[in-house]
Each structure stands twice: as C-alpha cells, then as structure tokens.
Length: 263
Image (cartoon, helix red, strand yellow):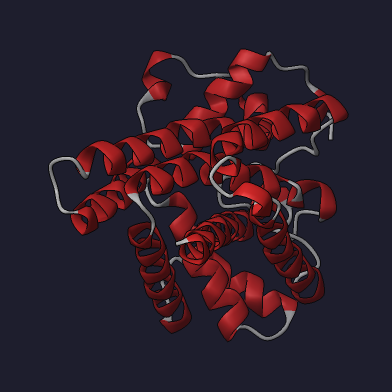
C-alpha cells in the first residue's frame, strides 16, 4: 500500500505507459521508476494516439498503392507489431477463461495458463474477421478517422474498470507483478480528454447519430463489467485487454452501420 502512494512525475508515467503498452524500444532511452508502472492506465489512451495513428496512416496511405483489403490487413498487422499483440493475448485468455471456466478459481487459473484453448482461438478468429470486415466496409477516409478515434476512446472506457472493480488476484500473482492504482479526479479528467478528443473527427461524419458511437460501446463495456463482477468479482490485465478490443470493435461496427444507412 505504501508503494501506491509514492509521488511520480507525469513524464515518467507517460514514458512507463509507452513502454508497457507497446513493444517499441522506449526503454532503451530511459527506464522510469517502478512506481510509474502503477499509473500506466491513466495514460493508456495517449498510447492509443500512437497505435491508432500508425494503424490509420497505414490504412490511408497504404490504400493509395495497395488494394483496399490488403491495406486493411497491413494496418491491423502494424498495430499487432507495435503492441506485440498484448491485447489480443488478453482477449484469447478472457475467452478461454470465461468460455471454459466454471467457478472463480477455475476461470482465473485458465486465464493465467499460457496455452490457448478452443474458445481463445475461435474468439480471435471471429474478432479479426469482424474487425477486418468492418474496416473494409467503410470508405478509406472514414475508416482511418474511425481508427484514430476508436483506439484512444476504447482505452479510456476500459480504464474505468480500475475504478469499478478490485483486482481479482493478489498483486504478487499478477502476470506483470503490477496492480494499477485507481485514477484520481485529475487523472480521470485527463483520461476523458485523451479518449474523447480524437473522437471529434469521427463525430462530424455521423451527423445526428454521433451519440451512438458513444452509447453502444459503453453498453458493451457495462455488459462485460457485469460479467466480470458476477464471475470473478474483479478484473485482471487480460480482462482489460479483452474489453478494450471489444469496445473498439463496437465503435467500428456502429460507424460501419451508420455509413451503410447513410448510403
């Protein structure tokens, strides 16, 4: 408990978030103090500006020289390379745990197992098919703006789990040996700005139905929150990764449906 109260510098915390949530070699330039890693969720959407920006740029500029479908696949691949498939690993573990588990202890044990099971494989396949199809179905510019907005937004929404639920395991049992601290009011306001600011570009394309791109993903997050509350009475890092991807996918599905209805 004493460690969570240690004061950390904001730039150390941002650097820790970039190291934690990406596989880019930020750690080679500087290694922030260990206490900064407890704050990484507070800057999670900011890392989405990086991953979403790289993914959107790959899709937009790649489509100028490649077939649209190839550009979509390349964009997804770029983000997987940047993040090391961190969240996809969480989604697979989440699907295995909640799909094949029973009681709380069994679900947590399955999620901690490094082997992927049937539910995890099927979950990743269905997720990737929906992701690729949704992005492919939108015009390139709309898809790129949707990525720019959805990536940080989904991370902002998912970060609320840290306030809404306790960590489901003991800290020493965590995969990364770190339990995130609960964001303060100031950190919560910062998270809101980080997550909503890039969405402004997408709102302009959805006309009067812009609110759906907020409401539907929020409902997805709330449903998953209720599932975690009932099944394991808390959250894990795998849960955060899974919720992040599913909330982001919900944004794309709504944006895609709005484009089809406006066509």
